[in-house]
Length: 367
Image 1 (cartoon, rainbow, N blue to C red):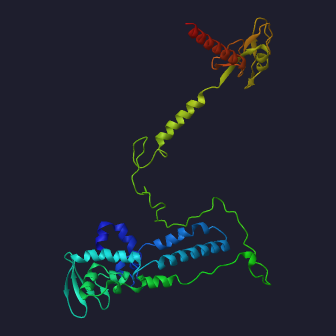
Image 2 (cartoon, helix red, strand yellow; image 1 turned 30 degrees about the vertical axis):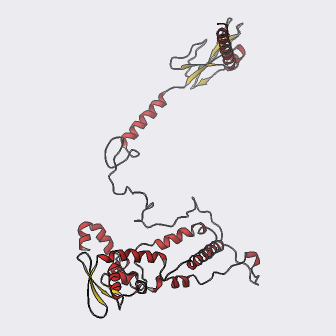
């Protein structure tokens, strides 16, 4: 702890508030025969029943029961194929530790006591009490390479010194209990009591939560690096302490672009078509206390509201505003004129292009 205090005082303050029995293997109890610090077993089971957690109580319990029924049967079938005394994963750990045992040296004392030397470190091994100097054998129940070296010197079998909870026999006994089948609800025995009504369903705001509530210090995504405590640099003003979303300079630039777009006036559309179309489009537009007028310029005279003439086609303009108007093909100074062709004009242009293509093709065949 003194070395940890020098390296990281916040980590020292955090761990000093928690009981040392929960995070230091040297203070673990020797009864459970487990050296796990994390709760991976609970997390695995939690993810295993994740699809049943948000269901009603009876459906949830029945789903979990069926899952465990299937799991027990699969494990029973796998146990029947095992051979030897130890479980396969424990046997792999013992074999790896046996490879390191060749690097050890020992000094033998009486009554099964050894002093094992490994890379300039001495450890005491007691085979009769099944204890070990670093307490790894005591806590986990699986001996390491120091104890294996002493066991081999005694001429005993390594499997006999592993805790009995890791044997295939005990593993088989843990799956002997049977989870019995349960008939469906329609086949249950009817009683004289009234059925229990379900609780009132309340619609909570927001989307339903399926994940468990995490601790404040626990990362939301363990596979993603958190930026908490890092110095963020803005990509707009190149300063530290904020990003581009909260940058004042970026907000000013955005407000300027919005104001420039708001100053632009609307455009006036001028259509080119027949006299009937111009007359129907040329109506009075008014705004802001002033009035506008529409006019069509043809070969004859024009009227204020609608144009009258002998021309087949003409142009009309719509004006409105503070009493300003325009006639003929003109528009106000502030207004922008956009020429929009009618459907008839578009059809004529397409037909003309087709005729030009036919002429080009005919000329190619002639030459």
